[in-house]
Length: 603
Image (spheres, rainbow, N blue to C red):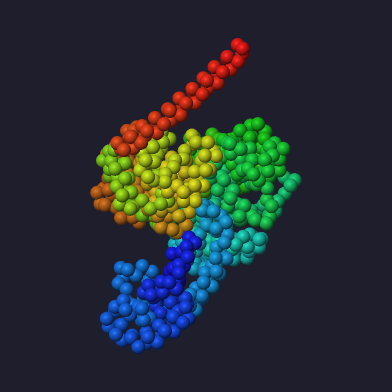
C-alpha cells in the first residue's frame, strides 16, 4: 500500500522526487525507484556495495543508499519498514483488488451514512447446508435461535433457498446482491421463512441484527408487483417518523426497478415525495403504507385512508406500540385492517411478557422466533456502569472523558427529558465540541437537518431523548452515553443498541447516582446476559420489585438542573446579553417604523 497516497487522500500532492531519501526510510529502495529511474539505478549499485555495513550499523546512511532500514516498532505506524522490498507490482495488484471491492460497495456510498438494521453481512459460512429436521437442533444452537409454535417453518441457511423453497423472484435476489446483503443474519434466517409461509409472527432480536430486511423482503414477495386497481395492500407502523423514513429508504433500495407505489404518512406530511406532493385523498391507490400510529388513526377517521384491503400488517418496535401511549391507536389500526386474510408480524428488540400476552390476543396461530436471550443486548457492545455520586458528578465525568480522549465521535448522549437535553446542550456548546441536540420540540426540518449533519460528521456529539433510541441506525456510532439512567430495561437496550450494530464493535457508558442505585440491577442483568464482566457486588444487588419498576417507567425521577460550569455560565450570559441586544434593536426599529407611519397619517 502506498502510505503517502493514503496520507494525501484529501487531495494534497507529495513530491516523491524531492523527498526521495526520506521516502526510502518507509518504503525502501524499490519504492523510491518509482519516482526516478536514474536515481534508482544509482541507488541500486551503491546499495549493493554498502548493504553489509548498513545492516550492522542500522544507520540513516544506509537509507540513502537503498538498503533496508529497521524502524523501531513505535515509529513504524504503517507496518511498512519490514516490507522494504515491496514492489510497484504489488501496489498495482492491491489497487486492482481495491477497484473490484469499490464496485461492490458503490451502492453503500449512495445510501449516505445511515443504513437500516440489516446492512451488513453476518459472520459465518456462506455455504451452510439446508436445514432439515435432523440438523435443526444444531442449527438453532449455532445461531442462538429459539422458535415456538405449531409447525414452525424450518429456518433457511442461505439466500439461495429463497428461490428453491419459496420461489422468490430473481429481481429480489439481484437487489440483495447489489446492495451488499450477501449472507442472511440469524433473525432473517428464522423469521423470513415464517412470513414467506404466510404465518403470523412474533419476532425478537437484538438491535442492529437485521429485523427490517426480515419483514421487507417477504412483504415484497407476497405483493409480487404494483397493482393500480387495489388500495393499500401492506401497512408498516413505526413509533417515530424518523424510523418510518428509514424503513422507506431501505424499502426503495430493495424494491428498485419494480415501481411499487409507497406512501410515507406521518404527523407532518400527508404523503412523502413518492406521492409527488399530491393530497392523499386524491391518490389513494398505494401498494405500501409506512406510517406513525396517530397519523394513520386520524387518516382513517377522516376517511383519507381505507385499510379494508390490507393483507399484511407489520408493527415495528412492537413493544413500544403496545404500551399505554400507543395502545389505543394500535387497537384502532387493528380494527381498521378488516380483511379476513390479514397476516400480522411484530418485531422488536425487547419483548416483555405483557407485550407477548397482548400480542397473542389478536394473532392467529402465530410463530415465535427469538435470537439470543430475550431482553438482551448484542454481544458486540462493551457496556460500562460508572458511579458519579450526584447530578453534578455527571458533567464532571463527561468532561473528564473528553479530556482523556475517550470521547470518540460519533457519539449519542441520552437524557430523560427535553429540558435536560437543552440544558446539557448549553453546557457543552461552550466546551468547543461539535454538538447539537434533537428532540420532539424541534420542527421536522430542523430535526432532519441535525440528523444529516450527524451523518456527515459535522456534529460529533448528538444529545437526544428517547426519540432517537428506537430503530434509527447511524452507521459507525462509536459510543453511547446514558447521561440519565434509563427508565426501563427496554429503554436501556434500545439506547445502547444505537452502537455495535450489524457486527460492529461499540461502547456504552451509563452514569448512575445514589438515587439510581435501586434500579441498578436491571441494567446489571442485561450486562451479564450479554457476556460483560460485572463486579460481584453488583450481581448481589437486589432486583427492584414490580411496583418500583412500574413507578420509574411511568415517571422519570426529578433531577437537579444541569449547570455546574462557571465558564459555560459566563458564555451563556454573553449569549443572553447578545440576544437581548438584538431583540431591543428590533423593538426600536419597529417603534421607529410605527412613529413614521403615525406622522405620515397626520400629515
